[in-house]
Length: 499
Image 1 (cartoon, helix red, strand yellow):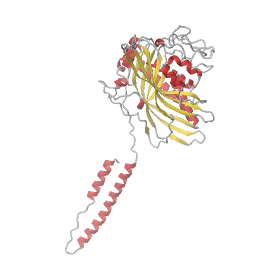
Image 2 (image 1 turned 60 degrees about the vertical axis):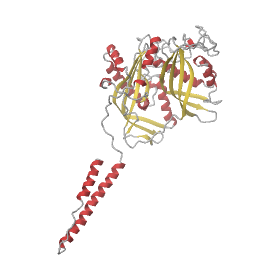
Image 3 (image 1 turned 90 degrees about the vertical axis):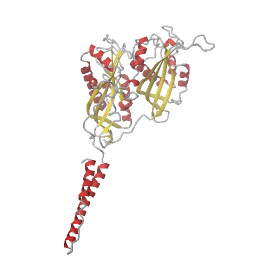
């Protein structure tokens, strides 16, 4: 019974429970009878009123039941100011080889290597990637106290927030040449790491960092690939022992502006414990982003038209791949099998899943996600550049998530009865180049390779990065943290975006 109907019954019972007054007659018999009826009737209806009132109070304190149906996303969903696609396309007019995804891979690898080398001699090999001022600050970074060692660095999230061009300016007094036109890139990273101090148990830390990069207008991007400490001009490896002033192979000065991207500013906004304690769920749970409007790029329709022209079955094949990755990823999660995730996710995301599973193991806990169901899939963004295709899918799903103590099986988080509904944005990438000959040997261990069917070397486990053309999950973001800005209404509906 709804609260409104209950209150209506309460008011009606009170009105009906008010008997007419007894009129005394001369002999007094009728008056006595009416008085008795009045007392009994009042007690009866007062009892009903009290019962109804108690039910209202009980209903008020009960959690309201979740509706069974899935909310259909409305048309107020476009966030043009949150996407930097126009800025990317403007840079690609001057540098056709620029790729947003490749840029993020470069920054991811550079910052991960930087944190690993803090307090070590290897930091000097990264000198060409930082301005003199920034490298000096990194040498004195307090993150790693003397004698401590930083390891298990994971970049949990990364995003290109800004891409801008600064025009050339006239020379100041006393200068012959003024600053030339430059491209500025702001990249935000969510990182975590393990710190081991002598005679102390290891501690775990997290930090949000914004890195500002710059390079002169006119410099061309190198093809995408795994980060390596190499010359950005020619790709030759840098010496391990002594880093000179210029590349031994091409002669490019490491301090030259033409070296390519160089970090000129580091902003650290938080320093906090990156782990949140589990909570037991006593009713169905919805993540904060589950009911938020879908967000999609203004260029989505045009990009989708291009892809469907080249691949008429694009949406069906993508839907099948998303389902395959979804099912395989969580099956591996439940088995603590990160190696089984390799054919499904990129190296960056693989490190994130390793970190999360290791976090549960450190606490002697086991996290499982059962009864997984995909509730909806729809396109959010399509990016295409010279090297890569990238497709972002808004994925809404439900599961029974539990966290238990490994030793006793005691439930410490989630529920095996009440479902959790969540929404994430998954970005898949694939190479655009035609498949090339597979590598004859592993670039890391040198082992000979037979036919390559897996994404990793069967001898040492390192990533082969063989070009396959298969969609690979590269980014996974919670809906409540995906992009920034306020929704705006497009001119059409949203059905064409559903997979």
